[in-house]
Length: 334
Image 1 (cartoon, one colour):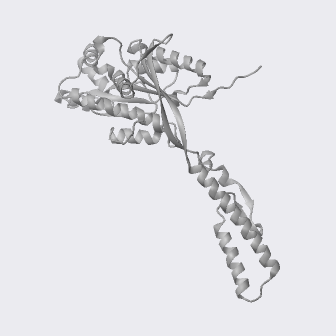
Image 2 (cartoon, rainbow, N blue to C red):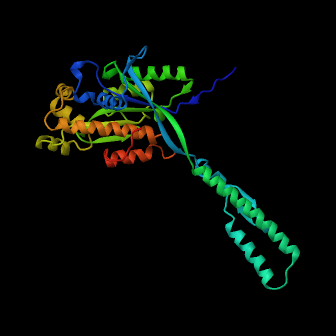
């Protein structure tokens, strides 16, 4: 039997969740759509229907500067564990800079000359050792420069909008992933190649949270994706849609039900129907201008994930920037 191996895909799918149809435009539940629409508008892209996936897609490429992987760190310090015999049978770690030994050899050679008793054999031997160590030093310096030089990498970014309504978003996402894998002959890993943008009732308007994995938190769109992909390991950008100023009644419920999510508390207070009416309603008052600014910041966060998420720094650095700087980080669009 022959086994076929596929290469990992290096691109990123940014999936914004929402409900299709004009009656849902501008509602709290469609923040995911708004974010990917903002990216598409900035890039001058047009949405196209993807047959067999029930989704709209568009794509673009970004050129990122990626540092070459440092072998000492990438293999768990394997190089640092290798040992070999150096001069005079001394145990020396491979990769250790021989500058100290080189200096010692020079001092011994100079001392022999100053004493007025030059030993030709010793001098010749020291000269050969000095040349040998200098050659090793130059090779190590060259390897060091190659490891830290920047490489230009082209990365494909796909924007995806499921047209299956929120509760069945996972169907469109999983079908598109399978279709892309067949066309590209690659393997798409949810924890590296997928970013889901979603509204979050547990986060206040004007805030966002980037998480690398986790539960759905009661969100039906994330529940569907988790069910179809059979994993909770995929990054998601949660954009807050909840009221920033809580009423006294809400604060009392928070202290009474400490440890529960805000969406659970609201369901307990208002009932499921009231919560659905809230998330399917439009932003009001000053929340409109705040969300307009927050949508742009969330779009910038997605581009930051596309730029830095695949480098050696990984999503950990992006996680810190997004969650702590809340969109005030620097990102130059290409």
